[in-house]
Image (cartoon, rainbow, N blue to C red; front, top):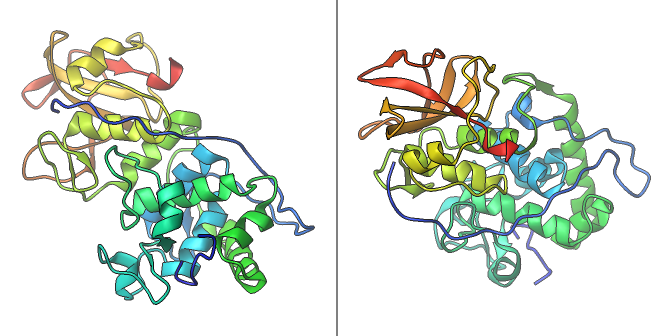
Length: 313
């Protein structure tokens, strides 16, 4: 790793991805630090970029690793993607030890623990893959029960462990609410992932960080939470489970639009109330935007058709 990891609305279906999960409250080894407040509810006063913050939370929730520890590693390794060192952000670039990407993986370690969030080949320079890969690696080395051991495995240095823990404690104490606290569980992980992709361009048939269409974003977001849903908006709508019209929408619910239940053309992910995150159409990027919450109400040329809650399956 940078401090060098010494242990060595479209068509196609996506490849399966393996995930794990758990939980934690206190560091092993006698360090009393209260960790684990959902980062999807936070914005760090220490300046973690929002997209990284939400990825730390999503990956941490999926693998049972405190998001603050992931953020601490991200800070020490590549300043959460802002380090000018080419090995942090430039595809294919590595440092003197052969480590590359925002979480600074060696190729040999990445081959064993790399994760593909969106399907396809795991990419250690892709922030989502790198952060999920780091969570996977920490989990494989004892986290959350033995966090210090797991961090030490990441880089064989006690000083490195202390620096990561110090940053984690800073992030735990310097945070402010920014998004709804109801966004928990798998739905919260899916929403956090979707929000982290804001700014990624719309690409018809897109299903990765290089571009998404609406249903590609929904599928990738729930895949990041360990839940498999179909590929197209119509298939996702048909898969359900459908929510009664009077049900209050929750963060992470999928909302659908089109001319009828048999002609569903768009899907978004609820952020809160009448706000969703989606990949609208050609020429736009993944973004948040308002939508009507009354079934049958107009949304542009389409109608709001209803919602599903994949996490309830």
